Length: 416
Ligand code: AMP
Figure 1 (cartoon, rainbow, N blue to C red):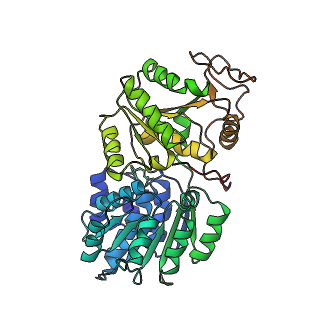
Figure 2 (cartoon, helix red, strand yellow):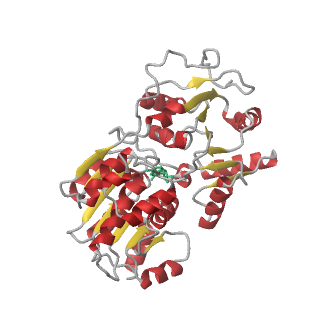
Figure 3 (cartoon, protein in one colour):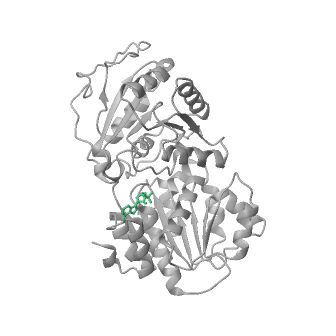
């Protein structure tokens, strides 16, 4: 299927050509015709599947074609993090470059004045994070009474991050007659309940993350002692001559410590997390993309929405508490057909997290035992099979999709 088959208007086709897209991704193929037809939709799709374009492109087309000129906001895209909000707005700019529709983005942590003045001038599409949106609504700067389309993006993350009540407050003020699109990587019970209330006879779209992504990623595991993790990371960065790596830590403090240690050891490293100002986070991201920084150390929330096509290494300095987060993290590498490596460290306190991850992906990570900092503080010394392969033969390979399951998150919260 091509974008032509989706009956997109010329200004969109030109913009997609400029972006270098040749054919729609599976979620785009399935979602775009229904969204164009005005249907409500619930889509199970995660970052990296092309979901932003799946809702942005038909949204732009519908708003343009219906041609109403209103001062009030016609479409709202609600997303959990500032980074995602900025990226979605950038997508609207890219795909909508030949259309006269106006859009802007609002998020917290920065002055509201420039945001308010853009809204005052009149916009068609607003991209927002929940807190700042409610704030500006409360102050009377934003009115959603003429809303035609509501997109709820990354609904499961909203739940994880404790934003779901804010989302409910927003929903309460939306006009009843509207089109609603809900996107979520997973469908925990609470999101299913929300979807039932929110959507009217929705079309259901479910896509697996591109299997090649997970298939192509070399996933290895290093058992080590907690205090040795930084030295092991440094050793691997040097040994493998790694030019660019994203390192995940569980806490902000941990991210800072790792970045400082690497900087002292001569690497260009920076940490991004929720305590950093928005400007500092954006700068770190763009420095990383432009290879001015070699190692970006991030917490999960800060890393949401990071989209770097040529990332070849992801390190799980700490294993995530929520198993599905592992899949999100490693999905940052191996994009756009590139090969990728995900290297995980496991200390003696993280064995249950490891178990959860291996259960979710239905496979064992390849244990590398030949390294200078093996685990010594555990009675149970894990065995490796020649540096590759786990203790037991894998039940199956990585082809299985692992993040679209209906499993509820285990209640773990990201410490950002
Ligand atoms: P998303 O899942 O929305 O975060 O998109 C992931 C990445 O895929 C982004 O870098 C998009 O620019 C890119 N992308 C989206 N749709 C397509 C397409 N049809 N062809 C090529 N790249 C795409």
